[in-house]
Length: 112
Length: 122
Image (cartoon, rainbow over all chains, first blue to last red; front, side, top):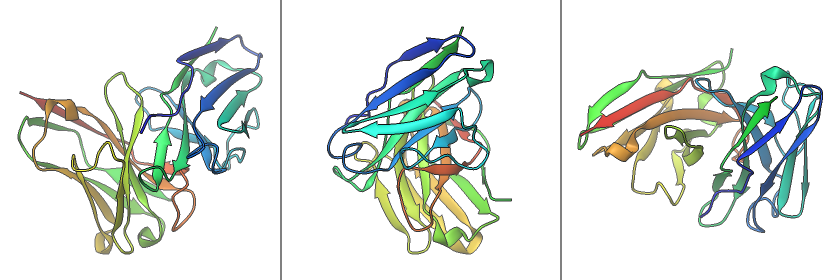
């Protein structure tokens, strides 16, 4: 069971917008609106930024938004800030082989 | 405050056994799945499996089935991850996490433990 596919790295300048893609299959991303995105700073626990494709937990900036089309989900960060520099992971519910969760390989965001 | 507190870092030898813990507080522990996530040094997050403390329903990622055992004791609001014979390749940070919704796994974990670093040497 392969991980969801994310670009290894993206970068942007402060104030710009960036988008991170997350490609799965008809058994996971394409089948359910249960895609989540996590921000992970080294040495800290991952933080949930988006769930159920486009919902933001309380306290998460509205600069973060999510969407999905077919088997590909996307995370967009607008108005990039230095503190956004981190690793970002997508995840999806899956029923392939088990009723569980798949993570993407992670994307390193660099704020130039 | 809803939180998960994990046991401390461990340094073990290959072949030894180990059980790490994750204690929940501030919510009804039995009503939410607890998931375990591994992160090897320099690598990404990997979902290992989940347990529903209410009835001990446990599900494993195919990649981790048979590699480690997930359990829970709802009487003390604690979930566990254990190995009977550690391998050097088990060296990693292990996180426990609670999903957003009770009685459901959707991949959305909003409460995370601080992580337990497990180091296995030969």
